[in-house]
Image (cartoon, rainbow, N blue to C red; front, top):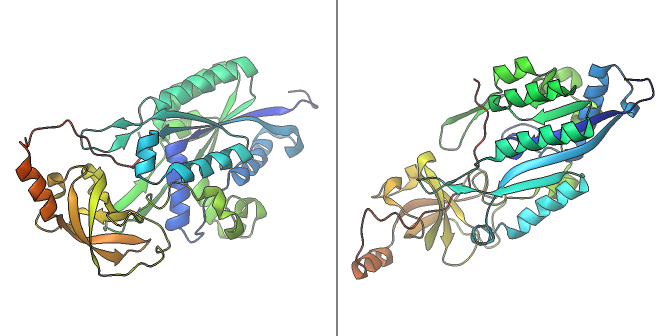
Length: 345
């Protein structure tokens, strides 16, 4: 690279992975804040400049792309996500990040999953790099499936930087959740950067570059998206909420394979998260999307939750009126859990 050349950087986000990391810092970490796109880009420029041995003024992010699954309009409406999804799109636009979306697919248990998003990211990254000759491609992911992409980008003459996070925490239901970065990916990229040790380094506790990775309280609206139905509900209680009241509602999201779901109350207020351990006289495998249930309102660690969930007598009456077949799989429930490809391979 000539002394006066600009180092051209492209950033590719594995959206499901980045969202999980951002939620970890908002709900589990002492920072209690989401990640900032602008802060992440400033960090990338600084890190690339250091690794390339050039001044930050010579580094420029010329393209950034965010890949994620997308609910249909009907699904987003049922989950009260239409407005929050648009807020998120506004945040990407302000950060000059192009959004690539593809409809989510149904799993057999009624939840959603992303299909082909990783393939799309890899194809776009390779094609864009071949056409625009990026100097450095930054992957924000933990998925070892991107190792072939790294090899291909290297053949085009691009260096590859990885921003990855490894952490674990205990969920409300007592289960331990762990996110790791593929060792194969770490070994293959040119510039691996494991972010959590840097963020938690006491020596950099007041480093402006690290602090800027997180949104300030006054700007948290940049990331007020996919709430209140992500991460087990809103952190604030709805107006007029009363604990211990029995309500009727409908199952609108069911992630049976992971042991939880969401209930839309008949009153039309915010959805209530419930865990399989809160079911009474039924198991989660007995539930189906659109089932009528009774539940008791309660406060959870991060918002409203449903306790003592059981099938409503109204639901039983509907079954008596229909020729119901236990093996009928025509109605598929909906979930809102995106997969995160972060296993170490």
